[in-house]
Image (tube, each protein chain N blue to C red):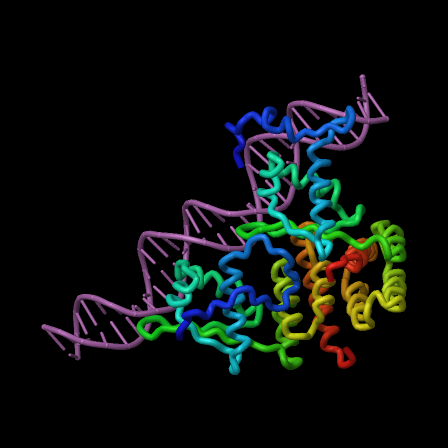
Length: 178
Length: 178
DNA sequence: TTTTGTTTGACCTTTTTTGACCATTGTCAA
DNA sequence: TTGACAATGGTCAAAAAAGGTCAAACAAAA
């Protein structure tokens, strides 16, 4: 996208720049708040936006939206983002339910070491089944997927992939729109 | 075939991606849903349409129909399309079921190329959900697991791991006790 | 002053839409 | 019988419509 020739934005954006006391509220912060307010009024704890439209609303470059998503809506801070390109593309932000799911959060913390061996994964999955966070069938499926025999990788690599898979499982279970 | 007054919009089939407050439904998606709704009411799991008539109903160029057929009704996602040109020409879409083990085994064969990209995996999972071999939740979980963003690997490596995961899923579904 | 966080824009990838041109089949008049 | 022509559907590449990446420039905080 070519932005050359765009109207100098300093003038227009002046009234968008609110001040809170002396500290300037950044654009990123404003977009963050806006998205969070949308999420709050959403019944499903998720919203769908168009990157271009949103950028237009805030009179900024589209990539600014990505910055906000990366820094304020990643899974470490309790959000999940799904996107699609092309005509009819969209960005979906899903708020993860962090309030009631302390166990999952704790597991997530522990799991984020980027490495989980097969036995640990199996135990963790079993625990999720025991706590009714996964059905038995889901547990079996996931156990098979994280099995060394099926991954067929060098140990270190398998452990790494497994940790990513487990992390994804935990994050997905935190979705409140399932 | 008479299409007059037949566009029943917003017929949303079970989808891995549950839709909430859609921003923009593409033409392709609408035509896809329409054809799927026709298929669902069809006793024979097959329908016959006229490309030109359908294009007129949706007020688009005829080749748009081909795009929909190629991307949404190909054999990878469980459909078979037969056509005939010339006067009295037609397009027949047949929905292939996944009714017995042989179908899954066939799927396994096709899949065992040691490489599956994200989109193909997503479509395959969607099909398993549509055919009630996976629950929607299982589908979402598995889709997340096979998502590039979550695997965080180089494309080629991701495709390889994904094929192993898909293979494991299919094999597991073939288990008698699942 | 150094470090960390924000903003911007050039360039890239994916998906959908459109249209010009091609191929096949059926009909009917010569 | 055959050859024009109408009625279908097929192909392919360009344009349009999204979103993604990354590094440089700026700004704020430590």
